Image 1 (cartoon, rainbow, N blue to C red):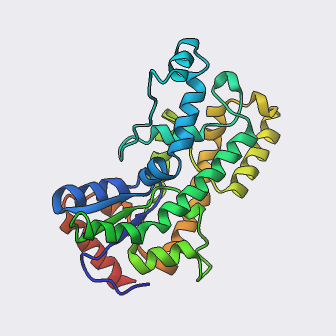
Image 2: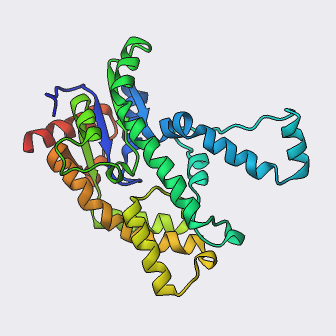
Length: 279
């Protein structure tokens, strides 16, 4: 881990919804920090072509749109923003019954693997963007918003893990740790709006097999939303110890209930200083 001083690059990590993007937005808007979003980088650099091709594939099912596309009369693109990553999650999809919007499990796995490769690449780009932020845009301060699935593409027990080594040599890793009440809130929010996500493949295959066994469903009859709701609770419990291991070996931990009280960059940096002194 690099020697850290106040104002040096920071990478925030933790489950989706614990406050990573909110903190990055506060730093960006109030104190001119460069906000590097891993999910945005994935969607606009490493998976943009696959996302747009999927849009085109669906559009060609409509005769009028097909004709317009073939004659270059219309243009289809993805409009991903920091606050709207729907094009990326829509491409990942959900496995199950095609009549309910599902895709075959093998295709789901293929897209998951695409995301894994893209996420690793985007994370490894962090030092590049620290330099770009300074040399091109004039930003002296930098925050990396790692997204909710970084724990799926690293091995915190491996001292030579390439992603964690790269990040820890560039940034201070800050884990925003949710408690049981946060986990419950995440489950409630996900139940209302079950969005596609990226999973560790071993975990995903185990959950899929367990779901088919418990429900007796054939793969092509699985309700996609029911499956990902069913698996999300297990996902939270799967990820929490992995995140904590990352923080214990490579960074620091700040409880999410303290992050909720942050209103200014100074509030956040005070929490970082306090957590560093306690670690």
